[in-house]
Amino acid sequence: MTEKDIIDYLDRLKDAWPELISFETGNDDGQYVNLTIETANRTTTWNRVRSQLIESKLLGAELRDAMIVTMTGAAGWDDYLLLHHYDRTEPLDELEKTKE
Image (cartoon, helix red, strand yellow):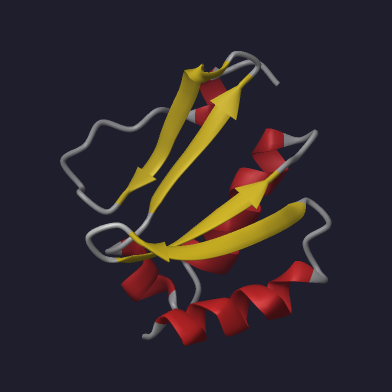
């Protein structure tokens, strides 16, 4: 999977995801793609990220092993959740246990 494959896939998702704001690419000791999503319903958006990215038949296996998913809260990064991490030993937060 290349950066172009990811960008092409995200371009296809963008029209179907009203909450998908933008994505950017860069290099910080390795290529990365950052997705920025704003949502009024965190649970729905997290379910969409899981089903269409992490569990995707097209890119899921590679994305699972390369991506980190965080969700900032009302206080920004002061109350963020770590929802997925490529390093399976990282402790994860559960969205369902937080307030909507």
